[in-house]
Length: 388
Image (cartoon, rainbow, N blue to C red; front, side):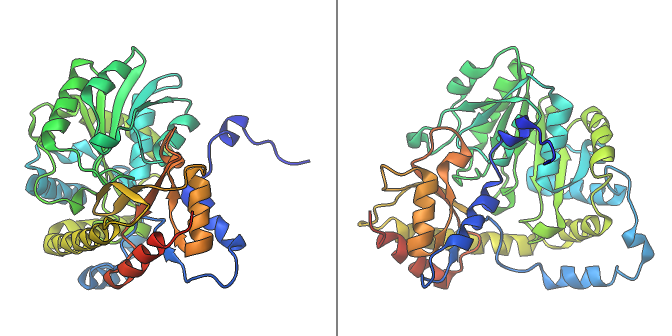
């Protein structure tokens, strides 16, 4: 007799990257070498000086020990200092909880803010892990519609119409995963004020914020920002440490205190070695991060220029440093079918649009973090030569 699995969990779609990479086992033999545009990770290694620094810490037995649930005080102080440089932020260490990636920070935020039956508004297309987590917790995801002419940027009027007495948060991702679109600071402020008027939370995922120039927004400069804003952040992309799972929750000191009840029973703490890597990164690697931002911006611009030339039946709808959001030309195919066709016939691995929200079967997400300059012409050629 097989073990009983919750029917509620069975109804949630599987992790999209795992699903798509599972197709590889049935890929026809003799096809072109694979170009992986599936997962948004930097292809470059961590800074050599960071690795050398960590090597010197491994002989210390303390490196293998727990830390306080919210993270080492000295690490959180260093992170606050970086937020002051990056955001001009009014942020204190007790307003931070270091987490096992941004995904765990999201779970802490949602579980602290919401209960079963509540609603969270998401801008479509949205990062697929977010509705998966909400559905697992029996919290209703409410999707703000995608408008091509806005390139996926949120519309405050449309979002305001979706707010109900059960709404607990407006969830936004900037830069967007999957469209790459960056929400302008003035628009973020408008959405912040909308959330404040309705006494709900603006939950802001800024996983890719370090790949945008200048100050991303001014929300952290507002004296009482923590009464409305909750931020989740990842440093895995910033420092090319995705496997270290370096995330962060920034919120009111009270929300952090309540979230620690979940943190302690879920992960206890971010690994100490990850915290020490983060401390070194925020103190020493600002210039390294900026150099990689420029590198990714160059690759993105090169790809967009080649992809957008006349004659490509795949149409670029929106893009930003790590991502391109593309309408595929196969009108009778779903996104899954189109993505599988690309894999089988062109050796291109990417994600189908429908995993990012309802009604998005006509789109594909291309992740550009993995594609080096010398691979871009070949990748674009394969798109252009695809048959209907």
